Length: 490
Ligand code: P53
Image (cartoon, rainbow, N blue to C red; front, side, top):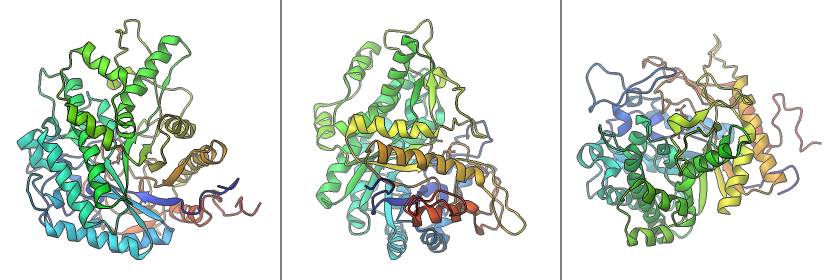
């Protein structure tokens, strides 16, 4: 790495997830997924999870932005931006519509053949998440999602089918998207999207979360092992939402609280990267009386199936504070324990925008895991205005991304952190995961569609499209708006 430059093979690109762009929810034999039974919400409330698909409800993921049909034009636009990589996911329920079949659905497999071929045509490297908030809905109703150990088998069968099928097309894989979102176990959305679980009255949501997450880290470790048997060149990563939790003050108990919060949010990647449970957590299970189904064979698999790299999303940072009545465990409940950080601004959706937190995170993960890191999501959800001549002046998005790229470069160039690539969220406008809104826009490409499902679905390049095109063309040297501050020319 030169003083200014990033590695020549740096994977610049953009990211999406299948259910947030594809639509065609019942085309090509696809089964329902958890994303297909979630309605749209507003700026500050949560999506409703309905009992199957109900008449009279609006499900924004059913059509999304119709990427399933429009991907050739969209991938062409990604190529025009200069993407070296494109992160998407495989909709599990296209491949195993119910989830518990023995044989995969050929029509579903063919769709991703076409999509990956289209990417490769432009030398765009696919980066593929196996499960991005889209478990087959039948696994929820029949098995309770990852409440059941059986779901490990369904997942590994799916993983094996796609590893075999795309072994010459895809090299970079991720197992579970933001597996650690469910550390916020009191939020119905996270347990449902991560694990296909709805907590029942009287249940201990935290215990349910730990059991399901255990099955997921085991499933992930098995997938890593299967992947390496099929193709030793595969790079299989874990994927966490990296929102660091800072102590609100320098009071020692606040620091301890923040440390526990970090442990609670990142034990997932501890297990996936290091192959064993951290000591604090096994002690915690004992203290809480959680008698989990964790076998010796599971522990051996966790050890054998550690990941090759760590992918993560970065949107925001959090802060926390100890209360006067902490238990000995400093038990962390994300819905209860976060406080506002007065030093950072917030997005329109209340997300705390903190570019320096990205440099902090890159260093923190590098110190902890000693693995290559891949920033597979970073971006800002914002209201965009399409002008009469189909322009979008999204300076706020450019500012957000530039400020984060600056910090990424500092981490790489000044701190020596190995970063494989950067795929901001999102390549093209998507359906927001938490709100189901189209109006919480993230893309470089505007899609004409509103929160209620109307619009022409036409695509328009935003100002950020042209800006990012120059960022990639100069390998991150020119982050200016007008192209006049290219530091390669300095
Ligand atoms: P939306 C919470 C916190 C951080 C990232 O999020 C999160 C979530 C879940 O909402 O999700 C990731 O659309 C996720 C994407 C999602 C993106 O961030 O809720 O991997 O699927 O769209 C942005 O604004």
